[in-house]
Length: 161
Image (cartoon, rainbow, N blue to C red; front, side):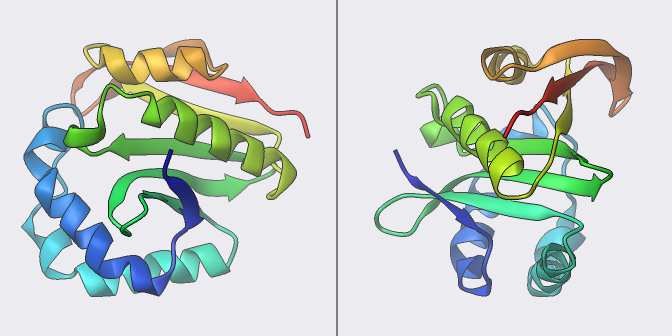
């Protein structure tokens, strides 16, 4: 398995390559981030690191031995013991259990390292892989929502230290 690392400035080249290489793949199940996201990637990374330093978010990358980013598992909008979970795995690494492993690792870290008690997530109904990851990692469906204009489900997981 790759290593789960908290996002750092030196991840920038590998993270940008990950996002660029997987842009079309991700856009099939989540909204595309747009050209501006890539044009201003350095600026965006600095803003994310500032949010992380303030404890508002925790951004993680799944990095293989050569330093290539294979995935992201993020906790955003940290407040009152809870956060929203988001994740994405490179197309070439999909289907190998990496998302499940990464989500489990971040859930453990959220409870023991960040002191969180609840994580929330959402997935489109047509994103069976993401819904399966959430089910395998202890999330339960709490309701329905719309994601990018399409039907989705909301989830929650209670954490124990």
